[in-house]
Length: 167
Image (cartoon, rainbow, N blue to C red; front, side, top):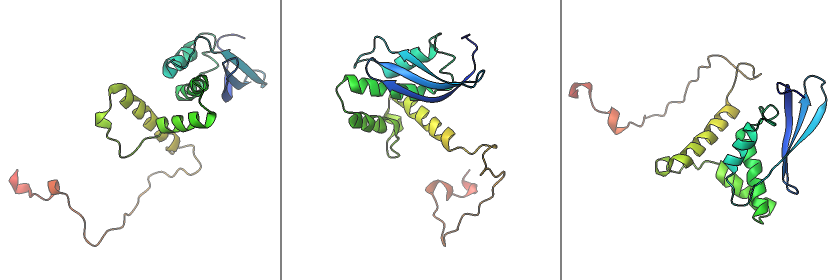
């Protein structure tokens, strides 16, 4: 196989014993469904999942195969492996990942450090991309105009009640 190989990722998963990332892909040249097993080496229950995912995705041997697999998905798979190595059950690991990958609307993002804030922003970006309507979508309607229902009395904010004469 040459480096510039075109393939379409179908499924991506994790094997615990021995640790490996498994990719099911379709070769666009021959149209065959294939499986690629990428062994995970030097990973422990103390390893950083983000770093491990980045290293695997940028590995020259696997780079062309993992182009269509998001970094977030690889991080999630490494989180499952770390949970397994820590002795957690699959349900516990899934619950922990769910807590880490959902955003609490009541959480004050101003109090987070830069790393956690970047993580939350990437989760929001991914959610936006997933929910975004694109031109190619069947439900896409260009230039939608919506009439919002008017309450009997509009609530006013303190900052917009001052008159223009005060400036």
